[in-house]
Image (cartoon, rainbow over all chains, first blue to last red; front, side):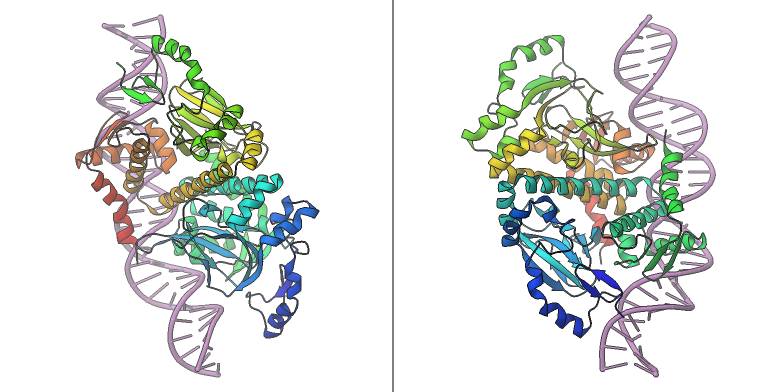
Length: 267
Length: 267
DNA sequence: TTCATAGATTGATCGTGGTCAAGTATAGCA
DNA sequence: TGCTATACTTGACCACGATCAATCTATGAA
């Protein structure tokens, strides 16, 4: 049963492809040769580029590499070479401390760019792991920098993306330092919701790409707490959750959860 | 009594200037006309630029504007125009929520660039407030972008700075989500220490530019907790603190505090 | 000097969420 | 189909740090 549109191809709910689909995917490989025809061109880097300059981006991109669930796109402390745009699937980035402890720093969905935190220093600043069967486009950084030097619009867009990344991270820090478990989880659900909407998928009915464990780690909580909050929300009729399938029944209530904090805390 | 070297001029411990010094500062104003002669040129943007291209940076920079303690360099939700390099003094950036609650997102010391989180969107993403008498150089963003398009080295440096900012913020998130009060404060002290060292000032003997309140807010703690940890460290002979004057007596012990966490937490 | 205000410290109490432990459900695979 | 490993849920208990409250210390003004 095929239920979900990801990038340009239909994939199964669990992110897998049937053999037939996999073959089909390779058969249509000429299709992946062009940012022009990519369904994400209005979210990804092409969004910043004029029609007639698009081939210059296509010249430097290595498209359509597919990873299976759990595979690493790159690893912390290996030489930094490229940024990656998610084409379909989803990616988790995390920092591993010397002692092996993990801190999840972000989740990336189709159209989003991974690796912007690694532009300083010789090596990748984090590890990027694929949460489900995922296809990415690779942008070698030296070529990308060269191109942004020639295309002011693209350079401007890169600045915007990186700036947005800083803001996201500040928001996360704020969430971690000031908000309760319920507020953090409500915020994450709403963030995912709006990102699904951007991709013209249902903002109220989606399946979480990440495990409870990853959510907990990302939000600075224990897995048990995440579990408890999910069931609490469910009992309150705010969401319905079975495993990774989530339905937002009362979006306004979720928004209230995140804002209530601000109200009571403020002034 | 003049005790501290800040940028190119000696200032008082509290960041103020005597009238004589203020006059002197304005008298030497031709000095501030050149990035070339700035003592921070090896930390700030000039670091990325060849000698003979430096005048192009000087053409776009508006140098040497001075703010008194507590004044705002820019405010959240006002139109974004420029990034600012701290020349002397220090700056605190924070996000103000709808309800008026503050979240401190960073402290900036001489040679560091403020405003990189505002490059996306129309308005500044945060408010920048001066913690002591502070001098800054202003880089209008449109001119800066134009220049980075022409100077690949400068563009590269901007990418590095923004990437570093993302990493810093990730580190902060990690600190907030995983570390105890003691670990967070030890980490902040060490961060400040290394940033003083960069400027060739004493890494073990400095005065905190920010109030306990700001430290608490930044680290996601209550003021009382910050106070308690300071006295605990003092009782253990790790630091000596009287008000904002801090002396790091045992840097290794501080490093141990931050790493112990990783040890016991890992694997 | 004295007073006023803000900042910093210290103590006592309480609550959120972590930890430990057990149990249930689900996915992957032969 | 069953087995196994992993993911998820639920419960009981406890600790770190928040909160409230009081005191102490600076700084600046009249």
